[in-house]
Length: 285
Image (tube, rainbow, N blue to C red; front, side, top):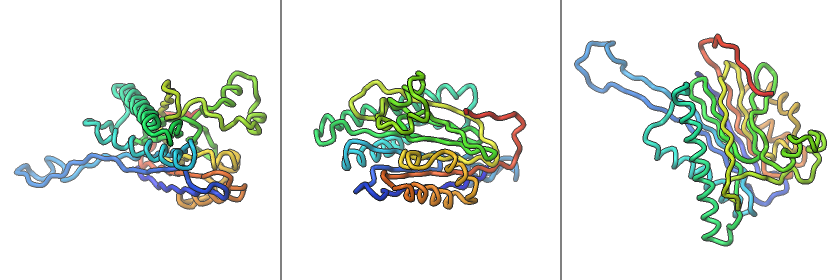
């Protein structure tokens, strides 16, 4: 697997500070033969298996509270992963359920951590954050999501949304009480019903998995992009830009040109595989 990944964050034209954060990490395990009496070729001189994890977070709760919540959520998640003695590097039927449960437990731990911090320091009471994370293990992609930051997949020039917004407006759309067009103009579209921190101890965590194909491009972003730029324009930008760094810059520039009323953060990853995948792949609508 070859991956071209980049990220970019901008405070926008209106906000005094940036409450968004992102991280891209490379996670791996390796074996390197230092000394041996075994014949050459009996064991590998070096073997390596690696994956990538990408996270975006959009804080809420005022300038200081939002920035702290998104920062604590990402750093806390990294610490929880490092504390796990056995890491999963491949998703198959035997470990997929375990991987899902691990992710949900980690997010719920972060939720409790942020709530407790707010209780101990009244200046940060109610602070919270969205968190959307993606991890690739070979061709396997896992998306873990809370809030209204989004994950998209560009495949064969079509853009697929991989996450569902945890907002009051989205609940109305799901129930048929509001159309997608009405939702886009609703003044309540930013009202979260599910986020890390805040005051809600009952956290809903969405976890999904899919198989990647060569040529796929993944986008993680905060609502500073999706509020300002429609999906068709996002799709075209991802198609037009050859490099991930160029795509990040183009997307941020589009959000700024549309007013830049919010912080905007994007992470783009492009995947190339040397071996074809025989099974027919499908993603959500």
